[in-house]
Image 1 (cartoon, rainbow, N blue to C red):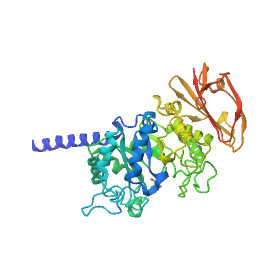
Image 2: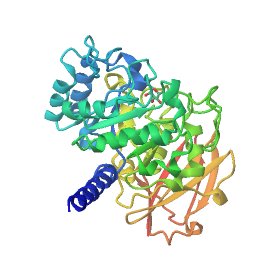
Image 3: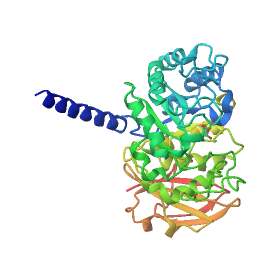
Length: 407
Ligand code: GLA
């Protein structure tokens, strides 16, 4: 009898544990790609309370919250270089004198959500303490502070790096599931071991490449120009390289487990308006998270207009959750690219001139095999095309036109 009881309690523990394991993927978090602001691209490890307070205010004053952005994400540098004497993570006392719990309250009072950054190794990339071996304790700490989002990174070597990313990132997934708080889990392991084949079981989103840089094309770093490249010189990827990597893998995009093309450089880099539109259009239509990386106090009107374009954001948040797919047969390798995908009410076509000079491009919508076009609107200009069957015009350097086709 005794033995029977312990067997059944063991079984129920196993049932509880397996439902806990499923909990991360099973919540309503991540039904559409996450939208927010992250400190890294503009502030690196110098993020501080004053910056964040300005960001919170800008979410309202710039109309970002209204456009759908709701996460305020502190990247590397928010924490102290040391844990507390009894081994807990703590905020950097100079940059965040009131701590994270007070900040979370402030962010929540504005109807926004707060995210932190952590690392699956011994150290973060900027040498703050990582969570290797402290996963449950740190997840509990984040939950107790009222944190809503964790970006979890891949630095901090030594013996932690002998474990596969599935183990290191899986440990934090389980710890978050046990924390008692619904925390969005953003996996950041730079595409190592091709997480589009396994990341869906672990995070709500997962990075597919090394860090984005402020180059639009022709970067000097980022040796890996394709998604399946194994070179470890990972960082410094241009916008165009990251778009090109997605040619191979956009079909792995799934609802609730988003492929993450990295934070946006719109408003941060010295891009032309067309480059910014191309960058944002591809991130949106490929269903990447839309995380602004700019210093919001310096955002130009053009950059703000790109980041808050309602119609383009609607592609990203579309209920069908389908990414655009590269259409090789309609593209000219190295010259221009055609991508298409279904959205509610029809489909979307992205036409990119990937050259630094203008090109005349023609494309028959009716040949794409996606239904007979009834009406075609170009989303950046808001204009209806006179001829809904065929586009035949000039695109400027690095320009992307985004056609919403009603069928
Ligand atoms: C890595 C990540 C970046 C950023 C930095 C912080 O490089 O990929 O997005 O978080 O670390 O140190």
